[in-house]
Image (cartoon, rainbow, N blue to C red; front, side, top):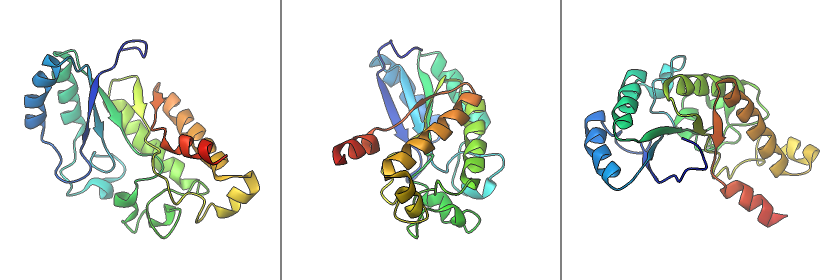
Length: 201
């Protein structure tokens, strides 16, 4: 599906509360198709079986690659595309709460990844690789919304060096975009932070 086509979709938040079972999603899909919905997006923070990072998703009712592929095939019958939505900056609290990942946090909020720590890009590549190899859509939503502690912790010195938190934000987006392009994905993202930085200029 190309961007010039009209998108009419629904996002399912499967990272807060109970993860929707495949059986239930299959009941919902035909109803969405009747209402001219042509894509759904699964909002995933920690509820996917990332191959190299089982600590992230253990005991969360996460989706396996097999389940996602089954969902994609089911949706295809109804003309519905499945676009993954992940997080690559903020909203990382459910991952950073694990001691194995806590050192990647921007601040003591343990909410956002710190862009001054190169290790985060290894983690993000693992996440993006698994997602890209599972979801067939040419698009991937990389999130990047509500990063309210950016520039207030580990990256504070970099903010001063680069002349603003917005420059750190853009640099990070470009790095994530580069990773996605390695797996032939085009990025989508939320626009609240960009609008916030523009407003404050």
